[in-house]
Image (cartoon, rainbow, N blue to C red; front, side, top):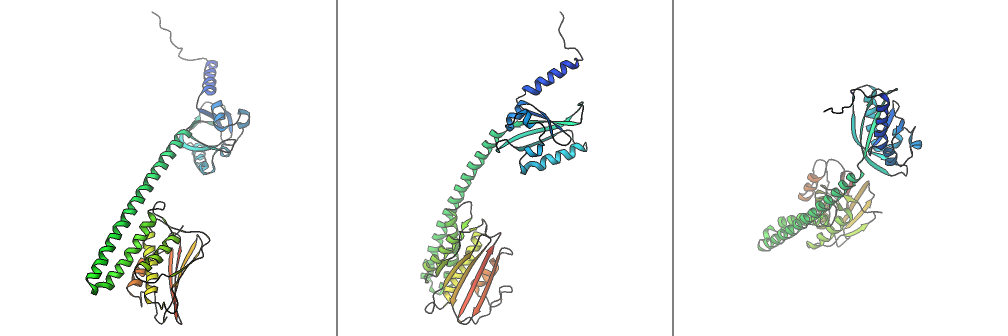
Length: 341
């Protein structure tokens, strides 16, 4: 029984016909590109992917069709292709459609051997649905992470409040420990404030306005008078994740220190919040003798609270000045990136 077999060599006309059919009917976009990255020919799927007709897209330079953030990928391939360093290239890029929208595509490019001129062929597969599904999964994961962060911060705050209650009890039972207990309570209040704010904020960052406001409330809650707060910021500022707790402890120490050592009967403690998104200033003015000399760089003349501030000050993004004057002391904490953003 004779079995029909394909001839070992097909006529060139048949090869050309098969290539044309594959090129024209392929569901994947195909484009032939010359040495200068101009489109010589494109199939229907490629034209539909970008929203152009074949007449419109022929002669386009591929860099004009690729999103600006992804053009370096094409340049890298072009350079390697010209040098003969690679036989193929695979990447995910964003094309710019005729209507200006972006569409994700998985491309495979390779030199086209046997063509009359040196060129390459690029296969482009639309992966927009996969990218949208990935973005949806990432958004869902972000929501879950945010929810977990809020819950953790809420529980931390509640536990800190319980510890504060125990310290207050011990302070009543042991009056000789009142000073050290009070200092511990004030610092725990600052940490509890941060975790309370983070419990309703995004991914661990927090509002500087809310942070300073609640610290002033907490100072009042620990038995001192409430500082007079003035907010001059045109817009709120975010204290970045990881910087909230040390920043809160610094501000808390500065405000509590001013309240404890200031002359409230002469003039109330004034806290002024000013600046912008690039640099924020927390200024604390209180009536005092102003005779002490403070040197934050060396730690000279600092009490326990200011020593803590000195230790907590980050190497970048924060600076502190203490300016004693006649009858008044001004403390100013300046915050910039990467503390705020």
